Image (cartoon, rainbow, N blue to C red; front, top):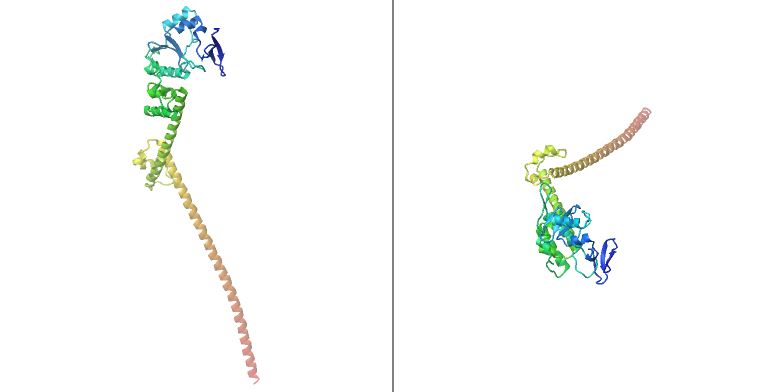
Length: 341
């Protein structure tokens, strides 16, 4: 091990290298610590990388070309040093863990790889890779526009996303391939801030779409109900297959191309009709119950009146008989007195 450089690990267990003199740290292995095979490959313009799927590809730093096949120069360097031909050596320019030296950011390197994989590497029908040039925005790695604050830079980055037409279902990799050549791509210097701004923008887009969809279905539901009410032949028991021919010529019906959506709106209207019918039935039943109570009350009153009249008539008849007997007795008394003179 070189006395100038020391190998160490960060808290996550990733190996990095520390310069005991300059106090700088870096992820890439210093030349002083490289094996002969690594040094031979270090001097080559061809650099090996991995795609997202783990497939190796090679990028030429001078011609800006890529290929899936291992270049002959790369293969010869490996054979010359008797190093195993495989994926063990993947030189990458990566992020500085904490020193004062200027190194390329690990996330920036990922950006380069994604752009290469998606936008600048073509594959023929038989699967062979076709070398293509790397975009100048990545090759030059410009600093990009400057802004007075993080919020201003984020606003410029989000404006780029909006202008580019980034959709809610886009992935970060797809978005990056589309906007990476734009100057505003580097409005945010930290790739982590770019991805965070992208995720924030996607969340806002999805919320806006949900609100628009909610407003649209609310208005459509109201218009659909008005349209169905204009067809009095549609009852609470009418089925969709019966009603559809009645309304398929209506403008509101054609405003939705989703058959399941139309059916759902019709079913909701039928449910409301059924509720109204049930409420009307309940009111009718309640009205009948009150009428029955009134009839029963009237019948009871009539019965009481009959009982009262019968009792009164009975008292009257008794009184009349009693008075008649008294008159008869008085008449008999008068006859006796007359007989006696």
